Image (cartoon, rainbow over all chains, first blue to last red; front, side, top):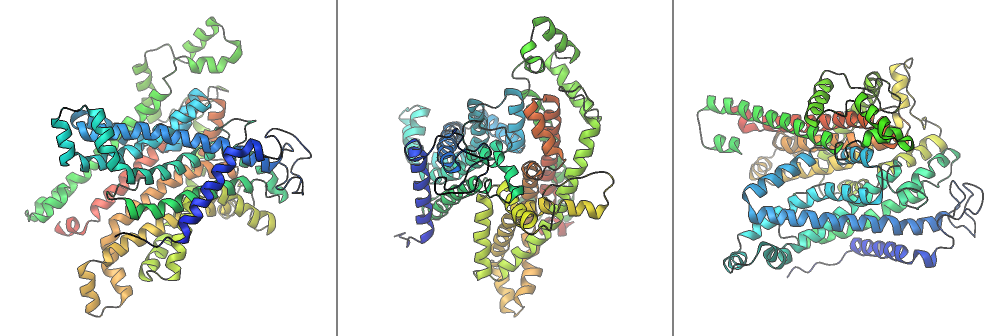
Length: 274
Length: 334
């Protein structure tokens, strides 16, 4: 039996994720102020009223942090879900169909992966401008390449199994085989990949927002908050570090959980696409 | 794949030497083909919305006549394949074109900024590559020690932490609190080499910290993987000291994975450079590209994108070639 002693790391990871998700869900109820309310002088130090101080426009940093969790996490989550939809279905189709479908998809993925993701997204954003749908689709497509490779590798192993062969001979359609026979057996490595891909999307949005090309103001989001408060650093204020720290703690939390999950549950070693 | 088959099949030695050349040539061919495909992809992605460039310049003042006129002066009324080959051939000749926003020739500016970025990335690579390989080897020799575990924790941290976080922490500590280094990495022509090095000390440290742990961890993994082989045990039983086993037996065999890790991280540096340049207001390509995206200056973005992508593809190509050449079986058979 593979029963491992549960160490402290995954517990920290789970708690961080739960805290972040509840902050995101409950933001409108627990935030002391609105995300766009201007309440005082810029970069005021923390007080009993404003626990983390005020930002560049005199808005409450704690409230913006809570609302920012909502924006950033929900966007990263929807990007990851979309990326999995594209990546897994294309990967399974490539593995099960083989032939030219596999060749075309694999070469396309090779080319997309040959361009650094951030650079490619900048080219796209310069043409379409930055909006939530453009961000979602662009990052999802870039992220789906890694998922494609993993799910194709996993499905190639599963495609030669007897039960897949039986389903084929029974005359089941490709979509049915993918959903009912391959997907359940490919789930553990894909779950771990989901965590890693979430981090990828999350850090990607944070970086783009930091560059001023992601989520547009007045909506609070963690990368954008770092950018807005960057100037404060010259006065010795820690305002830009608070949202940056928020980004770091959530990715660390997810990574801790994935690190614990990965060796226990993955039968198929996918390539560690970063 | 062919290489190992040939090498193990006991084919006469001269033919193996020739096949090495063939494999390398094949890899270079794939690299050139990838580069071409990348240029098509970058060009095509800016073509999805036809006429958008023209309307982007005009903004609210758009009339059909003005749009037609601007499309003609920019050459946007020619067929797509013609424009693609025109764009590519001029790019290869170094004539990069004009900025859409101010109609200036962007060639000189890009050359200067490319030089700055290249300087920054080279210094960062020059420090991080030897340092991480050295530390990775130490971690492999002292496997499971406190030092080893510290490296593991550190690499988890640097993977999770965004580059700008590292940058701002360094600014707060070394620039604001201690006042040792400048927080803005200004560059100008009349600075001496040492002054330039001093100006970029914080951006370089940021880049080094971002790639260091990952390279260390994978170097360690590659060496430890080799250390579990029977010939290492043999060497150990013969009484050779552990550090000599690592240097003389493990490292030569772990060279291929180490080279590919270094390449991945250099490629990572290229992307990291964009964010780090913005943090430190460094006059480089990354900053130029980000500004151009904000202004929706498509030709500048295309050019920067193609240059970044070309360097990235080129690095991967060189790494793969070195990896093939570092395979002892192929090298010694020649």
